[in-house]
Image (cartoon, rainbow, N blue to C red; front, side, top):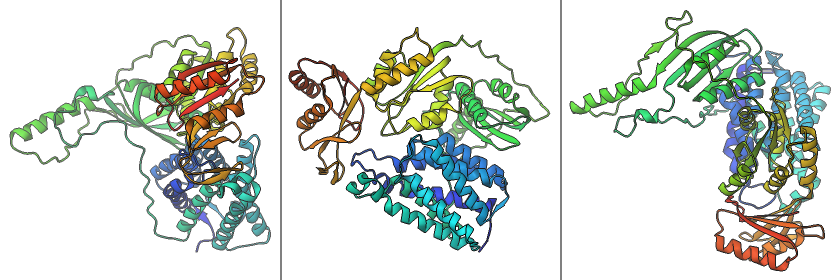
Amino acid sequence: MSDKINAALFKKMFLAGAKNLEAKKEWINELNVFPVPDGDTGTNMTMTIMSAAREVAALGDDDMATLAKSVSSGSLRGARGNSGVILSQLLRGFTKVLKENEEVDIPLITEACEKAVESAYKAVMKPKEGTILTVAKGMCDKAVELNNAGHDDLSSFIDIVIQAGNDTLAKTPEMLPVLKQAGVVDSGGQGLMEVLKGAYDAFLGKEIDYTIEAAAPVTKVASEYKGEVTDDDIKFGYCTEFIIMLNKTFNIKTELDFKAFLESIGDSIVVVADDEIVKVHVHTNDPGMAIQRALKYGALSNMKIDNMRLEHQEKIFKASEKAAAGVDDGTALDDNAVVKITSAGDAVPEVIEPNEPEEKKPFGFIAVSVGTGLDEIFTSLGVDMIISGGQTMNPSTEDIVNAANKVNAETIFVLPNNKNIILAANQAQYLIEDKNIVVIPTKTVAQGITALISFVPDMDAKENEATMTEEIKNVKTGEVTYAVRDTVIDDKEIKSGDYMGIGDSGILSVGPDMEETVMSMVDEMVDDDTELISIYYGEDVDEEHANEISDLISEKYSDLDVELQYGGQPIYYYIISAE
């Protein structure tokens, strides 16, 4: 058994850890404290690590520095939800130590563990014990203890550290009463342990499938011509590939900017970077624009441009010939490049100058939203870009960065509208340098709507940030959904199938009758300062039932303004705010 870990072994360990987490994600989702049908910790952590795993799997026999960069940057961009962001920061801190060494032993692994925990704790404004942070720290403390004691067997070192993580994880219900009441351990901590267990299996040499599937392709592919695919189906006509030989630093920020530019002119984008070269693939109608932007970063080589429309027409022609001759075997035809450009430049494509950019406006807005009705509300209030997502699907850091890159404004206010998206938004904030990104910590769509209504164009960014942040504190939000399992939370006994009214800090009401549950939830929210109750009904609620609920609330609280609007949100029958 090796007493050191080199790049080849670390690559196997990382991919095995990612695969093990992916295999366990649904089980981890079920560890959600609240028994709602949208547990997402396993999904968020899996999507975070798989973003990095795809980059790692695409690498060849690379050195540790290249591998470490792919792990760090891939997880950083793909980070989703609080658990995903913390996982990305653990990986980022850990690889900071690895990238400076071709092989790592127990002292260096211990140092990497310390850096990982330090990075993760810094990412959270108010770290809470009994979470993934505590589990990571428990393992780090054990690693330091073993290293200080002169432990020199790497296999047993890893085994003991993982056992320390399991022991810490088992104690999380004692640290967080809500976990104990729900009868579960921390789901983020469990996800971290699954990554490490998979990695240790690879270290031990167990037989593991290291195959990482690529992200789902966005272009239509036809294996044989049947007449249904036309040139109109090919949105971007030129498959463009090249390698940039870097002459300047290509950091995470630069990479995200470059990818955002490519997304503005095409699709099917792949950008794989290391310290010296960047491999690029994009489908676009303007290959010259991709090349022109790439030249800012260095010289180009291995350039290849294929006219996919012409190739498609040739395939149709050949398929027609086969059909006329009675041949229909469905075999793939060779792809013959129509235009090939070498580093010497056999041909030069036309470079199309982009239009002059419009002058930046002073303020722009990005909101996370789910539901057609809510989308329309945010758009009517001046939101420039809506990122689809929310409690059921948290957008990634890269999703937020890409949206910000498309908003032509000096200052962009980002409204996460979910407490599980705020960390990803904050992380995106530090990756954008040419615009002032302001994250308003909205935890619900109701807070997001209030923040927008509170915006005053004549005030500057700082004044608006202060005003919007202050105003959202006056909004109480309740959401009505159903329970997916029996449990006890906040001293309320919950049965599978019960309706639940979930407030800002816990369960407000539970019961088998939806109307009673809604009214009890609203009763808990309304106080002497309440002036307005806003009701947003979801996609599973018909308008007649929504009007009945609205009438009940209006009748009981006749001295308050009550507004009813279609939200169209999934999972949650009603989102109700009191302010």
